[in-house]
Length: 528
Image (cartoon, rainbow, N blue to C red; front, top):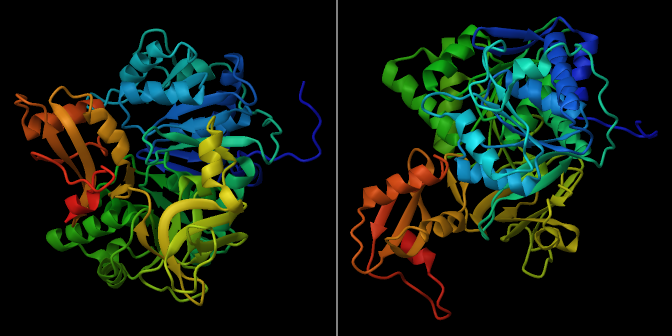
């Protein structure tokens, strides 16, 4: 029996509201597949009913491992409708990493895309589930819903949805109930799950939507189109694009992977209005246009506004893109723990290249010193944030939560400055994080892994400058006496044991590593 609540809020409302208002309006394009709002909502309702039939109920955690295909939003909102918590996984995780995330999140079920020959996602998920007895419900998201299960002991999405009605009354979750757990690593190594509430996620989607609204055609029958190339398992793809776009009633075009030719084709074929990407995607697109002689003005004729985040945007790249495509780029900043957007260069004000804009509505941003006191205007300090967008905490990690939330602020670990007009610039990172192509790579996690290699005696992992990706991952290794491992052998071993975006592409063997007076490795000396 559903308890009576005077106040309820479910993030699935961003889809349900538009499905009630305009069920026939186009909502999703993914390759040849085209869905209306009514059809997408019906799919989500059938998945919710199927999950309920498996015994999944309010508050249960359900993992979702899926690339940018139609099954992601359908499953995402289906899980939410059932009152359960979505735990999105990076699709590049290997079995060892999947098992860790399943175990740490207490997931009761895993919905996983079938994958490809190159990336057999369902097979890897089966191997991981075999290690985690608590996760005994595996559902494979097959491209053909009528296909038989490719994995032993697993249901297919077609079987899960079979005979389920196309309507489902979303469970009346409370605003402060957890909606999504997003995994983010830290300098201590193991990934942590940031618990984000229905209020966190919905408010951030609505406010982000308002940032883009000026670029949209406001007439009732206008079809504004948002292209998503960032992964939907990432907080930006989820909140600032998928949820914000559906809230606005826009049409969402999904690309399973970023390819410059496919992006340019989508710009033109689908009349894309808005696009959000990381700086490396803008850089790659410009290189493609130049190399292949593409008529960028024709390809981007419908493009009105773009956004960038995940890493600092080089001013030269921003200016070249805006000149080439005639669309303004607005930079923003946020973290998984902030749902994610915290600051943005708003459309109502001029942008300041080199900054990530001003605080969002209802959000405060400050630069604090080591005693959590505000620094002077323009001075460096740790970027700290508070407001409706801040997570509940790290799942099952009260100490880490207390450390991050001290003095009433969420401490980002980034170093920034704020000018007299409130524009934030990120100038350094307090955390030892590497930003590789907009993806976070945490050295401690890789160092712990590499120390299990029989040839490795000591290791330090750092980020080194890279023209295309911003930073590349490099491992400095002291080998064990007598070990004969090659640099390539180390790289290949890492590739087999961690996600593709993480493993070091560069390895350098040294006789010793520089250390300070306390015996800590001096990574700054390795970056020189």
